[in-house]
Length: 618
Image (tube, rainbow, N blue to C red; front, top):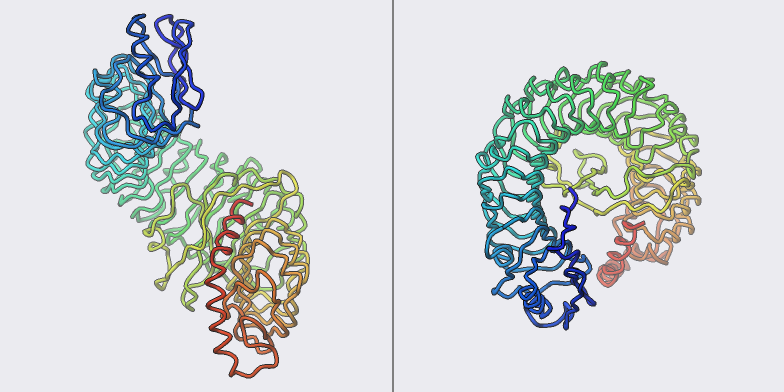
């Protein structure tokens, strides 16, 4: 929503609050006498402006408060007796209680736009009489109040209370807001049933990260004639998806992940949503199989049914339609069997596919060199299946040619298991608001697994058209043969996991070209020879595992190898040197060497953390 029109002689054009600040009223300029870093609690220029406006009988319309300002101290309680149309104090450091009441001591008046997002404001929000309010954004603060009552909110269109500490039942507070088109309550502590909503106007509804429970109301479909985005993820909802949802004909985003939904996948309902672009059903208890008809959703860009109990074959038509625009396919942590269908294996026709995650299933397949024809593929996870054969060098022939825009700015976390035999694979989840422990606890598995968060960050790639794969996990399969040297050309690869296979031969020196790799796992194979000195150039490396192979020779003495613990190299009968016993030394040197190892690791902890931070920004 744009700011209201204030081209009226009764209103000044703008107020900026920064080091050199001024505002104008009726063509005249007033300059403050203090900067925002002054210890004074109430800025003097605001007092001066009040006197000036009182003499001139002007009203002050605050258009925006520059985001570079630093309003850290609580304001004085005397208040501002000004008439605002737009009040925008977003992205500052404002803290304290009851700021809104201080700013609006005489009520809202004609206030239409109020934004306090990304501060540290708490207390009450007295907006029940704000009859002219159209836009309200209180997100990313410390409000712990219940859902504020609005009374007459006939003009309210946009309401964002996300990322606070608010709680209570909201089911009866929204029905009178007839023009409300955007509602975001994510990451709070709201409970109860899905609230009653005004019909007709709602376009974007975000209720994720709360404690809403119960089933989806069947009459929700009566309210979705204009609904484009619906996010109910990370709640305690249960039951099934009502067939009446098929009436939401303009819906583009449906995310009901991380709940307790069960039963057969309601594919028939989803097929009626012909405009769907993102369908996210992960971390539930859905059963059944994926039908061939799913390919009829030709606008679908993201399909995520991961971490359910979906079984059967991957449908052969899932990517067969030439109109298909699928970019992200998440099928991991299910019970899929059989082989990868020919339509999906013919990767050359999948121009848009960037993320393919099939890990932790029961798929039998020999990796095809046609993977190298997939000109957008940057994320490939096939861990914990029954893959056999070799790793074809041709799968890396797109390195240096890939353009990356899809993942820019996406939040992600790299998660690996606790190393137990029952829990396989290292895997990754894209996230927007943080991965909650409930999601990890709900992973579909025959055995309980303890997962560890390794790191989290935003992808900020520096390449446009010279990129490569950035995530590759082929662990826990039956792959044999040697590691292809062509793998070293994947310059931007961040995660490489080939552990728990039957790979043989030496570690290719070309892996020293993986300049952005942060995690390298080659453990539990039959690799031989020495550790290539070229790997000492991997400046971003924060985790390595070469254990349980047939490696020999001295471990490189320089960074980053001098930061890793001994268990990352164990069960290689010919390896020696720090952090293992010195070459040529007996077992008597082992204890002393381990003690040095612990001390050295502690002293380098800060360096490793710094390296991790840099790796995330790459």
